[in-house]
Length: 331
Image (cartoon, rainbow, N blue to C red; front, side, top):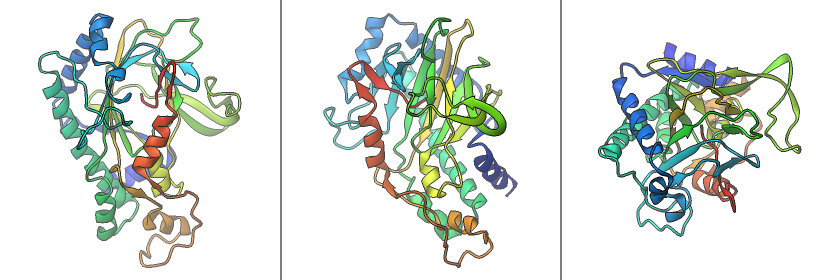
């Protein structure tokens, strides 16, 4: 119960938290994934481009340096994207192609093992969050059914040092679309930044956001440096809908100015593709101020329109493509 309460508090206050997984996975396992990623990124460009996004559905595969764009600016990173396999794949349909795996020995086997562990971790964290929200067992089973066939996404990302005169970012400020992000990154400090709204600290939301959206807010950018044995977790926009705005998906970005080549491996535990996402009764009860009465009808005004996750995702991805490449939402 203390874990559930801590998660609830972190989601209310920050939308980000650290999760100690040292007793769940051998620390050597993600280190090996990082080694394999470095081996891939060190290959000649023509070798990496054998699994380019353009070979498939435009979402699964390799994106070269600066091919990803956030808020109109090229991101200074390269990466490979993998999605949950689908029945009857069709590379002409967005998101509906086949994953492209590097030919490095052991790569696919070890990364697929990581996917399975992160999927189990996702369900465990979801259950703890359900407890923190005060959901009944029946309500948790309903929520569980919305993520039991998660349309997960996994990336491996390589970040060279950001040039001092570069106008973009390693990865521009953004929010994640879905449910839960589990980020494993190498020990590089000072790269991942999280925006926190804080009275008394007047700053711009982010210099890389277009002028129409670049409004001043009270807040600060803070570092979210790696902690040994932990993954950095954050919640996506689906949790905003599920909680009627009680939880917020937080802006984050990557500014990598160290001299090394940084590697991160985020796993995105998402809802089912056909999941119908709407405000949860438990969240509405909390907003009514009466969490002790699960049978009481919630009267809190619903602030978010329900969405079908797959349609929401497709609408986002449709805006992530332009003639210069694929716009990114990941860290």
